[in-house]
Image 1: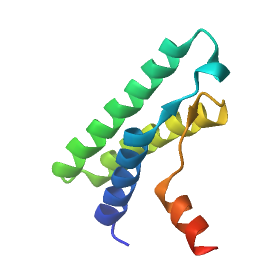
Image 2 (image 1 turned 120 degrees about the vertical axis):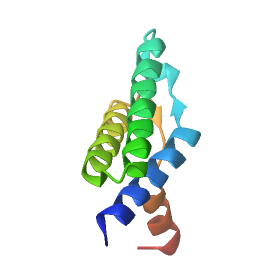
Image 3 (image 1 turned 90 degrees about the vertical axis):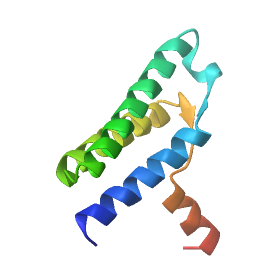
Image 4 (image 1 turned 180 degrees about the vertical axis):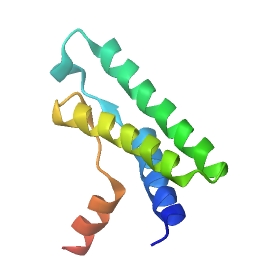
Length: 96
């Protein structure tokens, strides 16, 4: 898979998650604003990834989307948000 296709795949996946992400207020207690702020950082990294993809700077784009995914995964591991990556949904549906 080319770097351009890989970047596009990751951007599409992060876009999907950011449209469907849910903040789990009960698990983060009073610091919901902190979680929302981190989600906003993830969105900014995703926008950077899209910008650099358009400029055909695929290495920088991949790094930006990886930062986005890292923030989202960290929030999920802490129980602060709920979401599933699209690739995992497909595997679960197909029984893999």
